[in-house]
Amino acid sequence: MAKGTPKPEELTSSIDYNPPKTGWTETPVDFAEGTFCHGARPAYLETVGFPNAREWAPADEDWKLPENWKEIFIEAMGERLKKYRSFQLFMDICVRCGACADKCHFFIGTGDPKNMPVLRAELLRSVYRKYFTAAGKILGKNAGARELTVDVLKELWYYYYQCTECRRCSVFCPYGIDQAEITMIVREIFNLLGLNTDWIAGPVANCYKKGNHLGLEPHTITSNLEYLLDDIEDITGIRIEPTFNRKGAEILFVTPSGDLFGDPGTYTAMGYLMLFHELGLDYTWSTYASEGGNFGFFTSMDMAKRLNYKIYAEAKRLGVKWILGGECGHMWRVLNQYMDTWNGPADFMQEPVSPITGTRFENAKSTKMVHITEFTADLIKHGKLKLDPSRNDHLNVTFHDSCNTARGMGIFEEPRYIINSVCNNFQEMADDAIREKTFCCGSGSGLNAGENMEIRMRGGFPRANAVKKVKEKFGVNMLANICAIDRAVLPPLMDYWVGDVSVCGVHELLANALVMTGEKKRTQDLRLEDLPNVEEDPETEEGKEETA
Ligand code: SF4
Ligand code: SF4
Image (cartoon, rainbow, N blue to C red; front, side, top):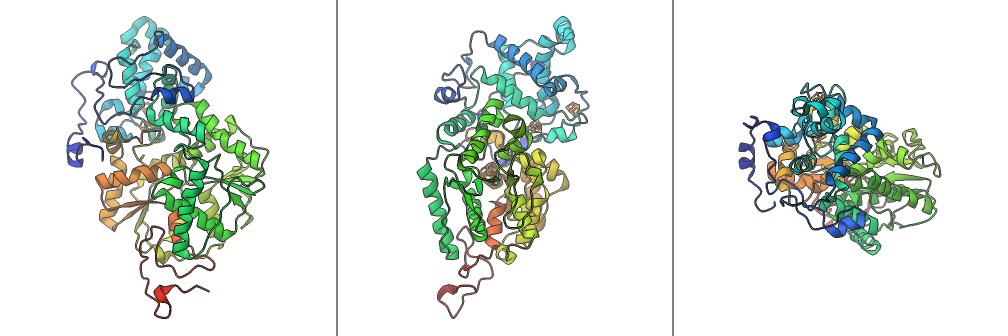
């Protein structure tokens, strides 16, 4: 945990739901250490093509803005009001019913009224009224309008980089006002002033240059996978030999680079490798489209479109029939909500058909991209996998619905179906914390930096609290999910608020249970930890007997 992060009890005792004594327009923003991300460094801004590349820090008095920053902001807002009818509507139709007010994890974890979705949007609506409505222009403050000053700009930046674009509030809004869309648009306008964050511009810059957020070179990707293949061989006795950048393969597989590099994502990658090998799938990895994640999506439609296109350009280059996508969050929201408009339809490929079951994935008719949990659930449903769920008997699992796959594309059943097929112990969290009402991890939309740990722990508080309840009631010790960001950010969140709950991808659980053809007797799980109920075989040294 970052130095200076308050202890959990200090943090909970500091949450105060009483409104401040001053009105919201008179309460200045406090750039307190641990609550915001670093400003993007000049090199990153230059690489991603944003203007005003300079050293700057959000807590600085002087943000070194362009002289005409106000005109740039207002003009850009006007353009987007015309371009996106939804944005215009969201500025006009809120009736202040308050249904969204207590639904944001950042409000729950901070008590700050400006983290109520309704007030977060009001910060911008006040500017909208001033510059785009007759009442606001004439009546000013009396019509809820306010001037765009440097202080207002800073307040907007602070609170719009305290929204994870999770869309939980929109589920409860009777008008379906999508705060995430508003946040994306505001952040896009900030980009015109050079006001991106280091942790968003950096990964996108890496992606532009190297093809993935982590900046992994092709040889690093292949050698990282070699380490995973060594571990798989130790565990199963089977040597897997995947292919890379192979033209003519039937399927291109794309997953977030986090799965290739950091635990526990690497165990999920081992799961993919083992499953595909067992199926004899005609597929290839790519060291060019080596990133499923899309950090551009948090902040710029153009960036997101370009990052999404890279996957399709590679599919075209390799001549594959369709794309299979791994356990990722934003890759899928982009795919499901935006791809067809931006880069689709991908008519150079074929409608995906599982080569194992013959299932036609009609939902992927246009995008030609199938979610790995759809693919695997279909295999299980057709009895194509030999599974031994008792290998996961040391785990008591609950499932975190990732905002992007849950609210962004409605993937609820497939991961649960897989988990229930490969584990004997599964517990749901409370109804108001799962499926479309799921709570964000608190670190989505590019907030998963190291310097803003306090706000991450605050934002993740409702999610952690729901896990804590199933841990206390049922002894849950594993939090499964289908998102690489979740696999990176939930471990520190669990350590901070809950303790003794690990985090995994669904395909790690699947591969633990998968009985592979020709495998040796397994004694370890994918983490090289002893499997439960494994007795030493007296006839063979250390139980290294091959199964029939
Ligand atoms: S989208 Fe999520 S983070 Fe943003 S205001 Fe709504 S609930 Fe809060
Ligand atoms: S729920 Fe919708 S209409 Fe009601 S206050 Fe929130 S944003 Fe406005």
